[in-house]
Amino acid sequence: MDWIVIVNPVSGKSRGKRLAESVVRFLAKRGVTAEPVFTTGPGDGTRLARQAVAEGIRQVAVCGGDGTVHEVVNGLVGSDAVLGIVPSGRGNDLARVLGIPGDVESASAVLMDGVDRQIDLGRIGDRYFGTVATLGFDSVVARWTYDRGARFYVLAVLKTLRTYRCPTVRLEGDFGRFEGPILLVATGNGGFYGAGMQIVPQAICDDGVLDVCLVKAVSKATLLSLFPRVFWGGHGKHPAVQMFRTKTLRIVTEEPLEIFADGEPVCCTPATINVVPGVLNVRVGKQGFGQ
Image 1 (cartoon, rainbow, N blue to C red):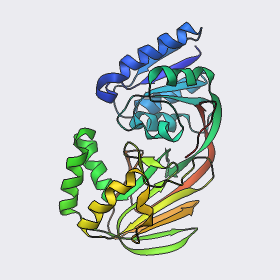
Image 2: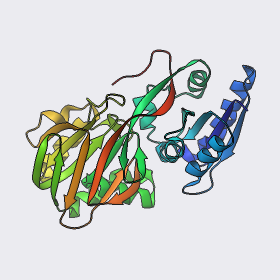
Image 3: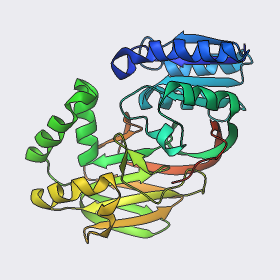
């Protein structure tokens, strides 16, 4: 078996299964064997990836969204297996970071003809992430959509905006120390989250550091004016926004607050986020990747 394809059959309004079948057919035409295996619940992506590595498979593709990719990454981290991605979810942010095309044929061609690169990951406790870890307003929105579905994202933003109270946090890292009320803190290994929003536009996934976006407490009106700018990274010029680079970020809050990473719940504060350089092999296009 040349590839195993881990599939979330319900990702992207159930597109995952159809796209995986297309991937297998595409590879077969090129003389490459691939077997799809399907997730059935939380944690399956990690379990299936670890099982594949234990069985000697060294090329593991994901046909799913960021949640499935997150699980598979945590199953492959530290091994010599290579990760390929065929995006089929709503966000597809790690695929975007890596420059992997969104259509199935082009993404399948990358599996065949691409090059292997090593990228960094962020780590919180025993969990790894490829894109962004969020705390504050974004995490509250993420929890609401995680429980109800990504299609309710705009509603989640509006409901959170109505009731959200900015927490006080203490941040410590290579940049020094910050303490005060915040709207959000986003810690990025890659620049994108939330289906293409550029929260830390300068982040590069193989530079050995994490990029941190701190948004201090602002009014609801200011938040509404800042929000559209995140789609192109223009929020960084606002005086309430600070950008840092660090290898380690320690976060302490007055009460435990939930942290999401790659759109998945990972832990609560207090927490320490570290960068782990070059720990994951990925298959990307011949042109490589970059922000």
